[in-house]
Length: 141
Image 1: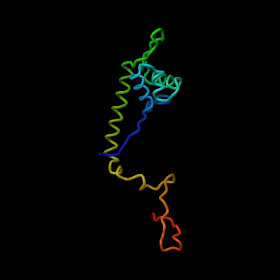
Image 2: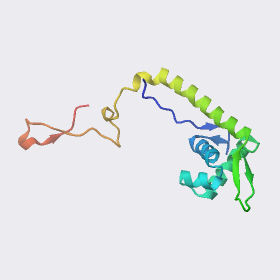
Image 3: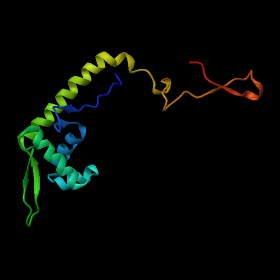
Image 4: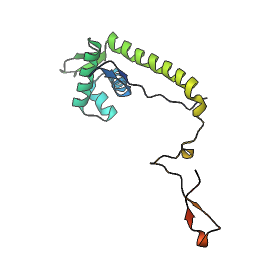
């Protein structure tokens, strides 16, 4: 089993992108039946959720959710067929990208992060017992 993961964002032009955040919003809206509840579930403001939903509608050119005006029973929202197709398309592309990534990057996956020396995570300095009082010297690279 490979440790390869893919974080996908599909960008079709200025202001026309979909990634895990927008897909999560659609899924949360589908579960809760409410944009306000979906926003709360994801820890975002209602305005942010509304703007993301508006961007998704512009992305597809069609509504991805339909809303029911509030009233005695309260309002709500449901995904449209377009919204469901958008989620399915995103996951289909993500699955294909994951499969391709596992094939092409799988050989690199077993490398532990601690074995990689980056400026944010340099290798620790080693103690050399042959130097006076165990003074530190840089690790060999």
